[in-house]
Every structure is written in structure tokens, then in C-alpha cells.
Image (cartoon, rainbow, N blue to C red; front, side, top):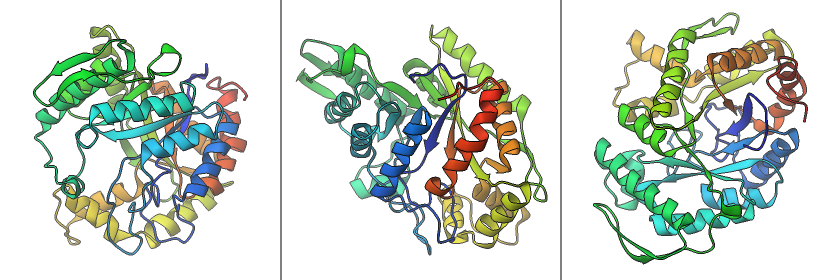
Length: 370
């Protein structure tokens, strides 16, 4: 993404209200356009590589309307690319909701605006209640990826082929398809996917340049905030992704997300974590997410309470700059090429990451000074 840094850094989920943190605290992320613009320009100035949004159409109920405010990502990306100089900005597209001819034109426009800095995060499914808003049924799992394969094939041809073409597939039938202009500079946008099933991973490795996968933790100490990644398990996943990509004759970047609470001291970070994500958690939104996964609300069940806690804290790096930097360094050693950072309030908290965590990554040889 335009740099030689071994560990790429980006911002994830800034286009949705509250980001990924279901909390009642008044300083929670607003996702307003003005805040997104300021954040993108700040991140660009810091030398971060990417800005990655979530595609969301509905969000959740509850006191904060968690993630209900969401800026549409291709329009958002186009505007941010016009206001920045170096950073790559992604759009997140649900393939069944965007006709490939329209989407290809929209994304080429964004790519032209950014002089080649637009990236595409492909999503083939979503939540049933969101698809219902469009009057489109959520297809069976395998069918989603079959349709997604036709979709990306058409989009790539529209981006690159000089002549009109017909396409006669199971999901799309096009006659005399054309799209001008083409992508900027003769290159195509970076493609990203985060499928978790075997079919989803195969789709990503066939088609995409980067893969986004979650990190699971083997231990989280509530008292100290120290997080121990499941190093052996995660490394096996990363190694398998690279090996399978090689079978397709391809190389892929492997990325993950880390939810960061960084404060000057470990004590301050832990205290804020307990305040924002325990005492002031939006448990209505947390329960709604679990129920959407088919897990009934049962506050008498230890397993349900454990799932609640895991969901509210996500994949955390909680602590002082040394602790957060150690977490990032360990993820790089596992094999990750980049980290999408989420924060409770990006504008308030990102400067400390830049001032204190990034220099530690530079000292470890993972990044060059901006």
C-alpha cells in the first residue's frame, strides 16, 4: 500500500457510530462526516497506510443505536481520497446489493479521484434484516460465493478490457457491457476479503490481494489488562493462508483488527477499560448482536456471560504504549502484514498511538520514520 513498512497500520470502522465499541460513554465515536474527514487527514499525515470502513445499513437498537449511523462507503471513500495525499481508502461493498456495472463505475471514479489509492473490501453476505430492507433474500452460503465470483469477474473485465463484452452467467446476464474510464494508471484496486469458511477463504485466495482475519486470545487478565494472543493457533491460520495462496500462484497480505485502549500508564488504561466497556457497556446492543448470531439471551448462563464479555472487549490491546507496542510486535512476528486499529474515540486517542506506540515499532524495525 505504497510503503516499505513491514507492519502496515490503518484505521478500521471509523465510518460507523461507536466504531466497534458498544458503550454508553459520551465520548464514544460519532462517525460524523466532519470527524471522519479530520481523522483521515490526521491518519494520512501520520503515514498510516489504510482507512477501512464497515458496510452497515441498519445497526442495532438500544440506548446508543449502536452502529446505526453509517456513512456509505464508496461515496465516503471518494470524498476522503480527494482530501488526502497518500493513504489508501477502501470501500466495502455487499455484492448482492450493488449491480457490478454500477459498482465498477463508482469504484473507478473513486480510483481516479485518489490517483490509484482506492481499495475494495468485498462482502458477499450480511445480516438478514439488512437484506430485507432491500427486499433481497439472503442466499445460501455457497450461492453467495458463486454469485460473488461472477460479480468480481465482471467488475475486473469492466476495469481492464478495452472492448465491449457479453456475459451469460447464472446470476448476471450482460449484453455489450462497457465502462469508461478505466482504473487509474492501468492498475486495479487492492482487493480485500474476510471470509471465514473454507469456501470464503478459497474465494479470497483466488481473487484478493489481502485477507482480513481475526485474532483469538488464549488469555485476558482482567486485573492487569495483559492479553496473550493464541500464537500457535493464529500462526497456523496465517501460514495456511499463505501456503494455500501459493497453490493458486498468488501472494496475499494478511491483516487483522485490534481494539486499542492506550493510556500513558497501565493503570489508567485498565481503569478506562472497566469504565467504558464494563460499567458503561451498552449491553442491549451486545445482546442484540448475540441474538442475531442465534444465541438466546440467558443471563443465568456462564457461557452466555462469557460470550458477552468476549464480544464487548473484541480483540483488545489494553495498556501503556509499551504494552500496546508489544502486542503489535507479537502479531507481526506471527506473520501479520498489517493491523486495522479501532479506538473508542479515534480523534482523541490516535495522537498517543502516533507519538508513543509508532516510535516503538520503528525501533523494532517494523516501520520507517514518516
